[in-house]
Length: 137
Image 1: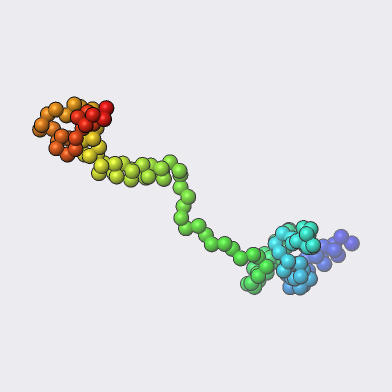
Image 2 (image 1 turned 135 degrees about the horizontal axis):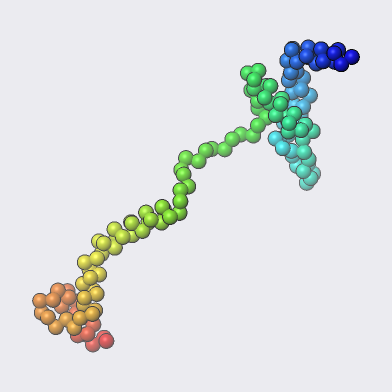
């Protein structure tokens, strides 16, 4: 008796998995979503299990047919996220370049602020009067 059942099963598998029948049977359920759907505010799982759904999908794809029940895939990220430290380093380097452009004036301001500016050859006397001489300090 077991031999007859095994023979019947082997014959059924020899003709192939009847995916067209399964696809027709679960077409309404497969169209509702991949995992389930909302109905009247409640989540309803699909009437077909994920394992059976995957098996039918695999057979359809192996037969060369299109599987239209998967949701559309989103667009791939083209820009890599990267590490924050790399991004901060680039910003710091850009800031350093800007500060180096301002460096001669900053040095002159520092020198003028920390000296008495009595020397006539001193450039800070020619550019602007020091705070000491203007009586601000």
